[in-house]
Image (cartoon, rainbow, N blue to C red):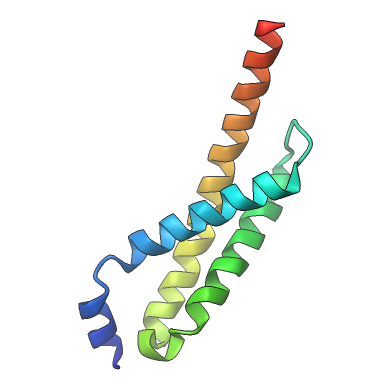
Length: 103
């Protein structure tokens, strides 16, 4: 399969990659039981690990995607992982704030 055929068969590859990354971040957070409040280093670590784990899945399709599309995926996944990690950070801070309010 050529990169053009890959894109033709998988027009929503960015959306699929984004959803997979989001699920990876959520699973990591659930499994890790990270202390709060999160630091910027925590967010960076989660983002980096989620990017690595997600790219390992897409590595199987690298030949089909071609170097240009795979390179775009690498950059995209890095940004998506950071975005999801920051959303998760905000969510944990909000949940902690609500727990304090209820006590």
